[in-house]
Image (cartoon, rainbow, N blue to C red; front, top):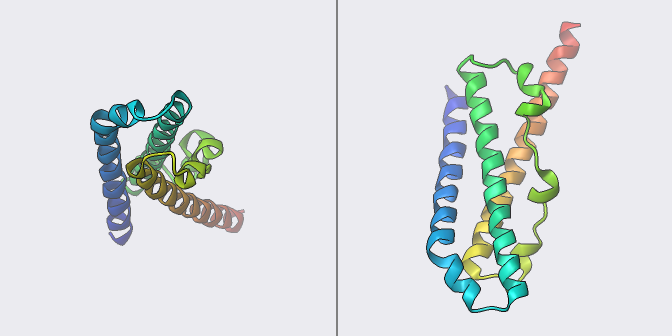
Length: 139
């Protein structure tokens, strides 16, 4: 049950960030883009998409973990590429977090989503390592 509680907290955190991101994009992004030049405006849009990509990837991974816990998917099946955390090329880039032309609200979302993605990436690495060790013992 401990594992389910842990993943529930990660799920809740991810969902909360998704809602915050949706609200930012819906209510603030356009206004903030109107205050800056076209180049910065484009970067704001791109960084908003980066946050969304990170959170979507994390949510998919958490749902996979929940499926394992519920017995709908085995840990071995979850090692297949289709169930793994992906998007690292986009999701690991944290340049927007340090770009002071990007609005502070978006930089905060970038930072929090980046830290969450890194945490889940470490969890996945541990899960993959543990499953690989179990597979070696079974041979």
